[in-house]
Length: 398
Image 1 (cartoon, rainbow, N blue to C red):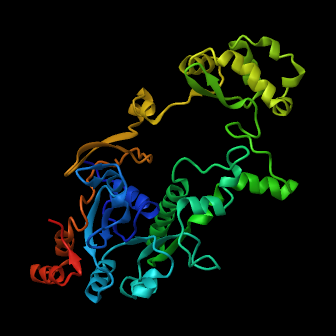
Image 2 (tube, helix red, strand yellow; image 1 turned 180 degrees about the vertical axis):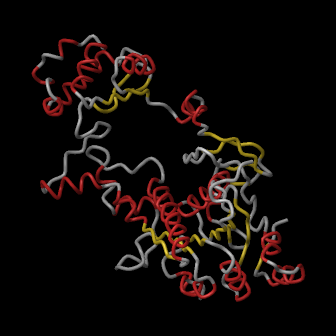
Image 3 (spheres, helix red, strand yellow; image 1 turned 90 degrees about the horizontal axis):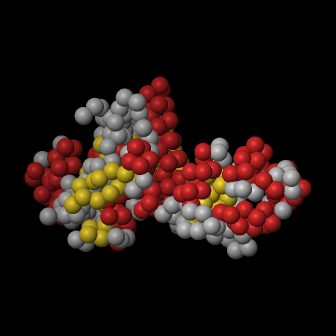
């Protein structure tokens, strides 16, 4: 197998649940050697999230694939010593503890720098490292709500995104930050700290309403599944579901009307321009759906696309997984997990022309699945490893 982009980069992943583990997953997909640290016993909280096969969480496996598992009790002096020995040898540390947690344990960023001045340290917190909210815990929906992101969705009632958008967005930004941090280290010889706040990441997606409010002092009326700037640009009823039509140019509007047999709408003064279509959006939707609701979504997609009108059937995830385009993109990868067997995982969307990515490597099936292996590679003797296990500082799963 060809060498992957981050091969040779060593990462200590102290994180749990989704945001930072998502970043660690992508680092592993790209070839980094990632050591996943969990607490003995229950391990990462996300091991409690389904679906399960043979009591193994596939949720956990998805976001921790390609990592080697080490279970450490960081409350013990021996456990802290193991962490610091690892810090001395890795290139990157990733964590998403509530700000100040590692400092209270005596193994925070400043202590880590003492043993590894070239360390690239990545941290995701809910509300950042300072300010009146920095001490509070945070979850995806909290960041989405407080940032104003949720207020921009839906129609009359705000709607949260259908998945953990802020968590994933924070993980992606941390990946970007760590990549820049490694370049910084390469050019200067010095390490750097990368801080990502979930609240910042959620607010970063609100740039359009912020810009508009700064100019007009107002926010546009929420338009649900329709774009606030263009019409028709949104979701329309078909006889077997829904289709999205995205008209942003007058020539696309003309092609849409002709393709649907609605040429009479071209001369209708209510719909002659994008501005007039926005003003008369409800009437326009009603006119279009008189035709779209009698046609199949894939039929609409094909006919409109052939006419130069951007359109797509609204698909379920299962329909997307089974589509020819998905197979061409390699968006789904078959992964084999010990104790589980084969399951389908979402591939990393980053593609390189000359180096591969690999999303198929196994996750630690249980906390401490590779503890002895990790410590042996660290240079610990077998006697020392057994001593740590006997003391409870380290756990090795059977």
